[in-house]
Length: 512
Image (cartoon, rainbow, N blue to C red):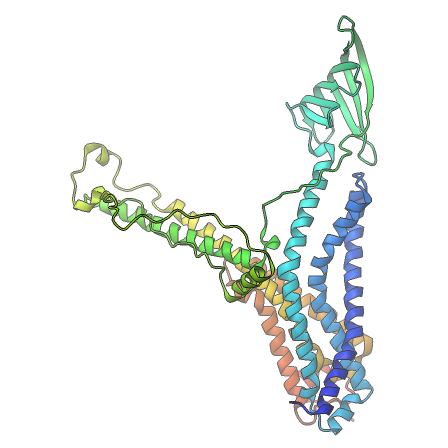
């Protein structure tokens, strides 16, 4: 157990990080959220959506932004706190009291490890659900605009239950219509059918009203109370305004499709397992095609397709997923299971399985079989394509799994990088915090995006693709910690001019 003075220092150091961490997280998240609002607000307002839907879009964007800004906030907080502590000589006082630099940094690394664990749970449990809801909501918003829903040669429902439009040709670029028929059922007493040779459509600023300019047509009107009344009016130009076009927003209630960013780690592990079974099946089919071609050359009958496949494991893959399953079983009520059929009695005799034709060895080859050719053209090509497709699918899910863990561990890695820099260059001030933060963020996320692309293309393994930036920065952080703990390299008020000799170890020094 640590001495009381060490525990007091640890609590003090952790408390010093709370306010900068919260401020940095709120500032960075707000900055990125404002950027999202500025990018999407004009298009959302132009669709005439309810205010609650617009707010929901941006609220669902917050979890993704927090997943990115949380490691950034950790680095900013660590740089700020240790720069201030070193500038106020608090680190020097701790060292004079027998507390080493490593012991000063240890509480920060422990706190960063706890934040990394929370970040992983956030990325794995909350983020996929909000991503799924956000994608579904965005799809519903895209379907709301009528210009995206009108199709040629189809009776389109413009206003639900009131107005229908059909056109043989719709030019999406110029909004021109050809051979137009409009069915107006808005009046309960009258039914109108408007036909035109051509026309043009436009939408109001809010996208709620549809303006039609119809050319060379007629209007046929029938009174429902008196079917003997029939009016027909010819026109050369008819301008109409259809009010309330696609003004109703219909949210999707059930959407079972999920992309890799909408799935938890356990769901992606099951998808990876299914893809690996497809890899084994495709590899077996490719071998079977080639082997059957060789058997034809040898005058043997082809082998039947193999039905032996690796069975699917009913248990969740990995200890993490099994622990989550046990926790869910303990917290949630048990589901009713389907009854399984009873096994057959022991005395029952199963019918024998029929033997394949090739079981007897060489069989006579009929002339039609010889005429089919000895070698299959492109043998195994389709199986090789299946094999590569299954591998790419498995790699995409594995890359996403590794990315969830890598971004979470980046909280710990950034703390390991920031503490030695702040202790060594304590007079850097705000410039040091901003400069180092921007440099680290830029390099890290460029490496993350590039690694994801290389991993999806099967150029790098998913682990190396996602963990290489973490490994590089962790190595740099450990090297910096080793340098700062060496005699003569303790915090002494260094600034930006000492950056090159302090970290690279150049033989020259500035003259005194």
